[in-house]
Amino acid sequence: MSKILVIDDDKAINELIKVNLKLNGYDVVQAYDGIEGFALAKQEIPNLVILDVMMPNVDGYTVAQRIRQADIIKNTPILMLTALSDIQDKGKGFDIGVDDYLVKPFEMEELKMRVKAILKRTHQLPESLATKELLVLKEITLLPEQYSVKINDKVAKLTPIEYDIFNILFQNHGNMVPSSKLLKDVWGYAPDDDVETIRVHIRHLRSKIDKISDGKKYIETIYGGGYKLNV
Image (cartoon, rainbow, N blue to C red):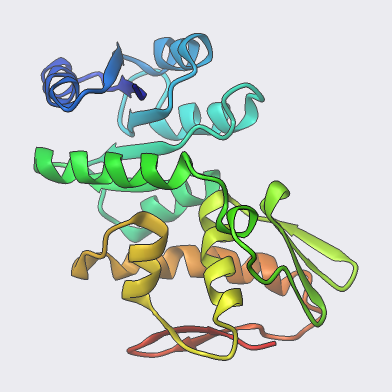
C-alpha cells in the first residue's frame, strides 16, 4: 500500500484529499503546516508528498527544497498544489525538483489520476535499467543510476523527470518526439493543455546540457511539433 503525505494548511481541502485517496486504497498521513510536514516526511518516509505552496511560516517551495536536501527522502516524488498558475511559479518548483503541479481549484478525479501516474512512474526502475536500451552514443553516455548525462568528460546532474525526458529523446535521436508523447511516456497522461509543463522542463534540461556541450546545441525545438536530439 502506497503511503501519501498531504501537507496543506486548508483543513477542508486536506481532509477531502485524505478521504478520496483512502477510498482508492492509499495510506494517508496529514500535516497542516510546512514545519510539521517536513518532520512527518522524515518520520513516515512516504511514497508521495502532496504539498501546498501557500502556507504560513514555511511555504511549499521551502519544504520541497528541504525534502530534496534530506538524504533519507530526497528522491520522494512531490505533487504541488497551487493557486498560482503562472509558468514562472511552476518553473521555480520544477527547478527544485517538484514532479508535477496541480492548480487550484481542481477536480478530485484529476488529482487521483496524477497521483496514480506519479506513483507508477517513480516506483519502477529507470527504463534504461530495466531494458536493453541504448546507453552510449558517440560522445554522450547516460548514467541512469545517477540520473546524469555525460558528454565527453563532463557530467550534468538531472532531476528524475529531466533524465526521463532526455532518455526518451536519446532513444529516438534524430527523430522528432511530439510533446504529447513526452507527456504520456513521462507522466503517464497527455492533457492537451499541459504543453507548457514540457516547455519549462525542456528549458531547464537544455540549460544543463548546454553547460557541458562545448557550444553544441543538442536539443532542437520543432515548433508546433515537439523536440529532437541531434547527435
